[in-house]
Length: 148
Image 1 (spheres, rainbow, N blue to C red):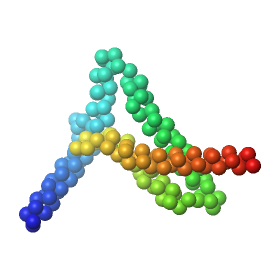
Image 2: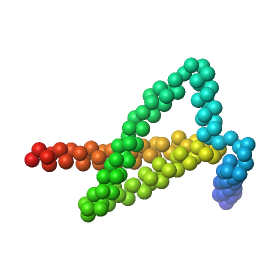
Image 3: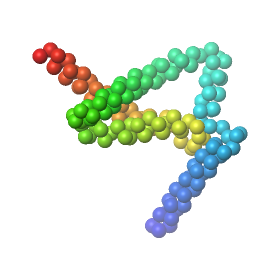
């Protein structure tokens, strides 16, 4: 049992060492290839064969982009309501991870890490669905209030 635990600890230390080393190489070495550069190379390769990259991005990530825009709007409205004293504490606590992931995902494209930046999109989608649902409820309440 102790050998198993030591093996796991050694493996985790080795993985973190490789990750930190790759971050250092991508920041301080000029010839290091980042995830963003690899993505741009794939885009150029696809365009050489006549594919419309914009169309593929809109088809695959269009819903996520719309959901992100709605979520940003919901966060701004949530912060506006917070200023007037009307706030939802549980939703307000989710705006921190939403902002952190929104900043962290594009930053991962600058580095060549063993994991991909798209791995965190699923966690961001969960937060975006919650904020968009909150926005839909808020807009419905505004509509009902105007009808009364």
